[in-house]
Image 1 (cartoon, rainbow, N blue to C red):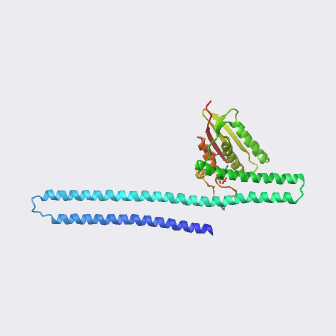
Image 2 (cartoon, rainbow, N blue to C red):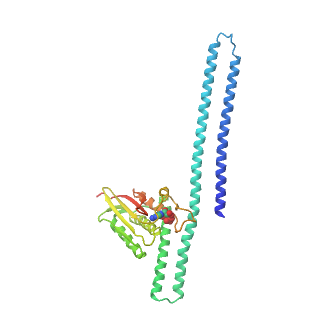
Length: 328
Ligand code: ADP
């Protein structure tokens, strides 16, 4: 219902835009033809007034012809400039309009996703705690419920961190706490935590010792965390996830490799955009807000690094973070 209304509104805006543009260009063309014809008529009249017996006939004729040519050149020049400015303005309006529409759509998707993402963990946590309070469960059952509740709380915590941090980083309200970090130590601790949270999944890390990077530990952890979280989310349970790092002079490349469905080439440049999620609400199987990769890219760029995604062979994708190393 809501979608239909949105589509109708979009169709109306698009129609109004093209209609207006067509009208402006047609009016411009009409104005040009009118002016041209008036100009021709005026000079034809001037030529008619010219008398053949006039001693300065040749001279006057020359001057009228020259002026006519000059005027024609002026009209053509002005016409082309107007047309160019109109089309340029139309292009700007079109791009701004498309950007606004896409942002609106993504924000609406985001609101729906966030509402859903917030409600589910809260509902599960509430239910689990009520069960624990009301029933006398044996130790294994309560342990299971507690672990499940903790997982949901962690998800909630990640979501809140992502939302809060993106707005803080955007507004410049977050001061980076730059310190020297040991990359192997950061990644190993993240992977250890994931292995505890998802004991059935295979997450491996292969990080050389003694790579020092300067940065905000919390943010770097969050960036790598988001990539592993996505790799887990978008990959079948029996497929492994590998985290590796390769050090070269001046920089280090951290890769998170999965064997999921991968990301189509035409989507690769979009996935880092705010609220962007591949597919539509109805085709998507996974939960999410489209903030994770946006935030990850923001963090990497705030650390003077780069992030990109490429295909894994034979399937899946590899997210690569390229960070400058601490100069010793
Ligand atoms: P979210 O996961 O909350 O949707 P992200 O910003 O983390 O948001 O990711 C944006 C989109 O990129 C996802 O919706 C998904 O379509 C795609 N994506 C991210 N990581 C992967 C991955 N490892 N494999 C396949 N698709 C991915």
